[in-house]
Amino acid sequence: MKQKTRLKVLLIATLALFGKSYCYAAAGHDNGNGGHSYGVTKPAAQEPQGGPNGGRLITIVEPYLEFLVTPERFVQITFLGRDGQVVPVADQVVSAIGGDRSAPTKVEFVEDEGRLISTAALPEIKRMPIILQIKTTLDAERVREAFYLNMSGCSGCEYKEYACICGH
Image 1 (tube, rainbow, N blue to C red):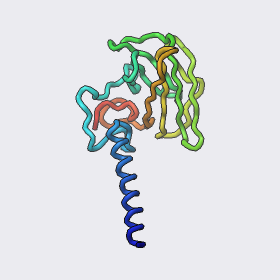
Image 2 (cartoon, rainbow, N blue to C red):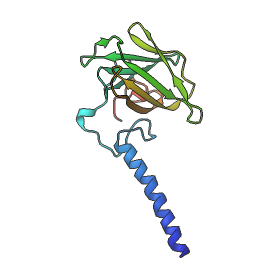
Image 3 (cartoon, helix red, strand yellow):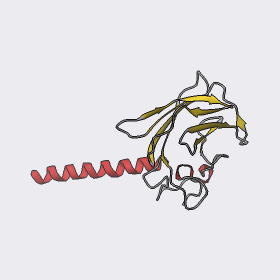
Image 4 (tube, helix red, strand yellow):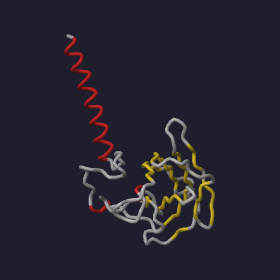
């Protein structure tokens, strides 16, 4: 009887561990390997594109947006049309949460020269989870984008790891 219980616990733990990892990677999320999903092949239509300023291009909303961390660690959000041209901020609302999971930092934005810029700098954490919440209009449904902000430089392209486009 004791053996069966141990086997059940082991089986449940194994399924939980591998099931979560597979679902997380298959959904296109960072799996802890610097933004690279080893063993998960992305369709050609979803190849990553870089933002014009070197940031992460978010294409789940229109207009698209570029998430860029400035050298001073402020977050700059630039809205872009499909042609890559800057679209001035209108009714778009963006909020972000990041930092240490036990004490997350809420990032607020203000408009500055047609872009959104954070009111405070991000904490000095080399690799942190970020959750963006985006509303393209006041009555639109909120869309979420989650990724790890890895500030290391990519060895295969000129971008930081959080915005890497080389797919290595």
